[in-house]
Structures are given as C-alpha cells and as structure tokens.
Length: 114
Image 1 (cartoon, rainbow, N blue to C red):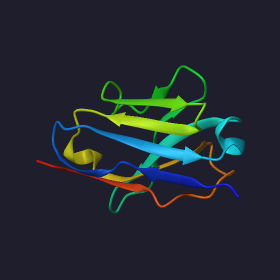
Image 2: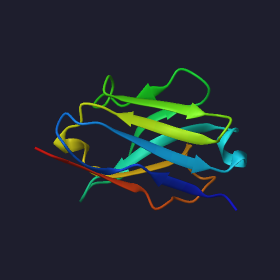
Image 3: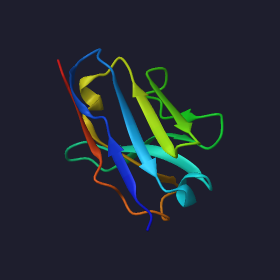
Image 4: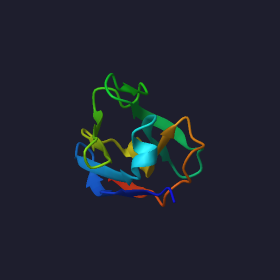
C-alpha cells in the first residue's frame, strides 16, 4: 500500500528554518515527480515545489528561500525552509505531481510567528 509520511514541522519565528521530510514507497518515489504542497487555514491546498531527478521548480513566493531535494537511496523527499515568513504558516504535504497515485498523508504543521 502506498503511504506518504511527512515530518519535521514545528513552530519558529520569522527568519527561522526547518527541514521537512517525507518518506514514500519506492513504487511512488522513483516513477514520477515528487512535490511539496501546503494548505493554510481557510485556503486551498497549493503546490510549493517539485522535483524529479534535477531541475527543481518552485512557486514564486518561496523561490530562493525553500529548497526541495531527494535521497533516492532512501526514498525520502526533503524540503528545506529558510527565512520563514508568517505567510508560510500551513500544513505541508508531500505527494506526486500531478496527484492521483498516492493518498494524502497527515501532513506536518509549520507555524511561523512574528
């Protein structure tokens, strides 16, 4: 069964950093783009960053602050969050891009306070 498990969230002040991790089954991890998504309170879930083997892409609001990368030997997807802002507060999820292969995991909460 395909499972996605996110971890690494927490509460930080503006300018702080976190590293999120996502473990996925090999069946999912190696066959397609993997991505991080987030959902802020009262908002729809949005795509944040994605990667396949190289050439990651980001939404404008996080480019230069967030870095997505993957460890293909361990089937782990990472998201390094630097220079965090209050507007980055959300539940962060990993999944394929596009979605449709794996069910959503529980996500990991990132809370940024000023």
